[in-house]
Image (cartoon, rainbow, N blue to C red; front, top):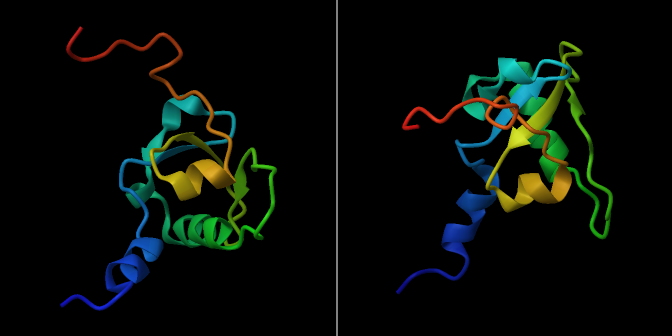
Length: 101
């Protein structure tokens, strides 16, 4: 028998790997969340966890507490990310072509 809630604790800590961010003002420099510098990834995770309950406004971006870089979320399927940040169009939306096209 599975322990109640055992799978949920791990899920809260893990971000979806398909989330992408770009430096503010540089949408073509988009990177996957796992390629963020360590300090920026830490700030990103803290921003997601720190959202006060009942807060309705989503952030336009994120500033790293360690290095000061500013990031915008360009794409995500992670509900926690989408509830915290406004997504900005990445390079695929700016007229980029799909590799299979």
